[in-house]
Amino acid sequence: MPAFTLPPRLVETALRPVYRTILNDRMPVAGQRRLLDLASVVQPVVRGVRRDAVDLGGRPAERFTAVPPAGGGTAPADTAAVLYLHGGGFVTGSPRTHRPLTARLARDTGAAVHSLDYRLAPEHPYPAAVDDAEAAFADLARQYGDDTASIAVAGDSAGGGIAAALARRLLDRGDRPAALVLIAPAVDPGADPAMMTEDAVLRRGWIRFACDAYRGAAPAGDPGFAPLHADTRGFPPTYVQVGAREMLHDHAVRYVRSLRENGVDVTFDVSPVLWHVAQLQSGLVRQAAESVDAIAAFLRDRLPV
Image 1 (cartoon, rainbow, N blue to C red):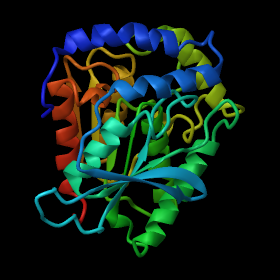
Image 2 (cartoon, rainbow, N blue to C red):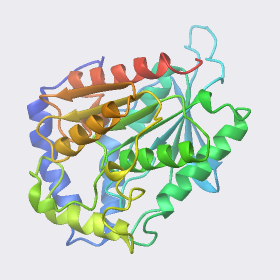
Image 3 (tube, rainbow, N blue to C red):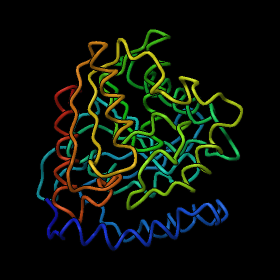
Image 4 (cartoon, rainbow, N blue to C red):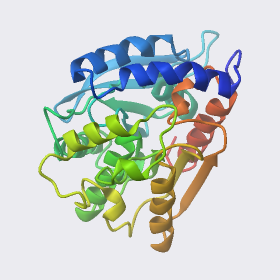
């Protein structure tokens, strides 16, 4: 748990104007990215984790590993990995913005967590991000002796949608990750935002801009672009988290229904108090920390750590 915690509603209220200012379709994308990186520094990052800059599948990435405590002990064996795909609406976000989450997962799972700096839209529309994720997974598989059962895939928001699309690609080529973790995944970015309820983080205008930038020339129902329309048979054990009051809640519910109808082992948690990807504030809010703890426990049960 965090050393101190704040009431969820207080933190959500404080974050609302920050996200409304930064995730704004009237601001140039470069400005959104810069401000989001700057704002991320106020979020606490856990200690006891080493961060290294690495190359993964031809893209930059950050590798997080737990380190022995100062008083002694041994570091976890390098036997398992998590490929993490950050959120940010396909147009913003970076490994830096997600350090509070990825570092905590590395500490609490004992696995090496690799946060991929995949290409962003509008400069690189679909399928660039999924291509980067596939190349990164293949690189990790080679590092772990082609044992894909030692590698899990995780992502939040836009990264959750990319993770779901990656899982389908991997299965189609005969590879199966050990597990899949999706935090408020954007599994239907071709949907009309006018049909969704705004939340503390996401607004319709920005969602429309971001998803259109990512889609490029792909049809709205392309299953690689919108995994809600993809076949989910054969998926690995999957853990989905979402907030009850957030914009992507209904899409997550529909995606979980598809997984369950196809016989996938699914764990589904809906938080009544957390906002969109509040797991990034796990160093401030007890309920967010508990959500990340639950993800870590899920991964420990399915990875050779």
